[in-house]
Picture 1 (tube, each protein chain N blue to C red):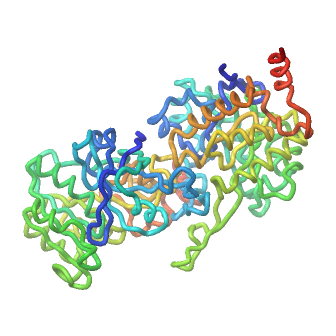
Picture 2 (cartoon, chains in turn brown, yellow):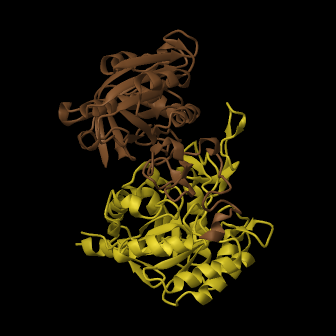
Picture 3 (cartoon, rainbow over the protein chains, first blue to last red):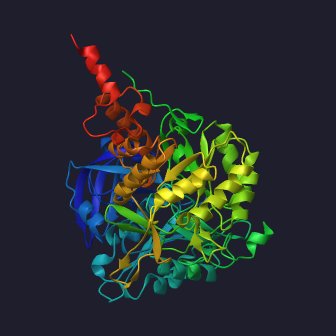
Length: 283
Length: 325
């Protein structure tokens, strides 16, 4: 649904911007893993595509608020970073398929790098409510790009921090730390949100331990509602066939082992409908 | 005073002139989460192809000033899945559906028309002529009147007489009027314009083209003047042919421009990416504009800008007579 939300607060969190918006309809339908799309630039903007953001936090205040976390990467996010309290924002959401939750209490490792870890906190809340054990592995290039370390420490059984320059926690990436965390916590499942290359490595680690892994992908998208067909990636379906599926409508959460990370950015030759592909003769 | 928004696409009556542009409403179900699709004049599907198509590699989208480039490459399930799942879903709900088709050869277009000829729920058939012609070194059909006419003539001969065949034209041709005329002579009941002109953007950080496919279709407000020009020229040359105008329509005012230039139906595309409710908003805004100009029927506004300078439109004369003491 579309909501004209009012900005409640803006704050800087380390290297990131966080924006709390009053959006009752979205807040009450929200489940961890959902995202929202935001129109940027105001009424007569020259920016025609919406920007998609994961929701970091949902609160019941003022009928329901959502908090978005982002970095400024271009004119759209720069505009968003300039919003102040009482400004209005055009939001559409909640969008996408949320994280599936384990039926029984399980040991879950939540892996996030950069602002990707933002989406893991509402997930951790939901897992804790179900009696799961939660352990965090959070990383970034440098200390100030590790998002939510304090909150992770408060929530989780253990929190492992990594930075590439060694300025906070272990030197290295989240995937360097992940095997020992999985082993130590005897994890049953892994949840991850990070850039594509990190998700690929996280999935490889989880598969080595033979435990399920759910990944939330960030693909560039224009609409967020499934009509523009620009956010596709190759994913293996239940029938074993690879399809180019939309990150916004079929995702953003996928089973890690189903995503063909090495083929993201290409059309694999055996994908359904690939040019000259063999599959077209079968169907 | 309510404005009569009904319009005719050839002989088919639509409740209002707003349709989705091909490829911008996917299968229709995505938009149905937001509003009742019956409120559209018609829904235009993505271009349906014979075989399932995976489309082009990503990145497929790049935002440009007042527009965007896309190179989706007609990703879709193919005609079998379309007839099995997508068209029945629309037909069962009684949603007026303009089915867009795309192919690489005349034979492929003809086969698609044959498959759709007996399918219930096809309000009109739109022929996407901006596909590379496999039999002519990959030059797109819409670039050449004779190639476009061959497709239209073949599809028209196969399709049922009561289903209008609409030729969708590309703007980046030397003379759009000659292509339009060739299509009409070949039997097109209506024309639709404009498809995306080709554009390109380069990522100045990666020092590479922004799109994996290098070039892509440009859409959004940036192409509106191009659409208005094409509709104007074609309506001037072929005033009796119904036109679907599209290209960068973001507001009722944009739609009104296309109507005044000669379009009797207006397609909304990229605006849907920005605002899922764009079609309803644009229809409402267009109705308000017509009312504000004293026009009681949409039909009275179609091509109105073509009247010679200085001549008052007839409806306004009637109004002034009525208001005379």
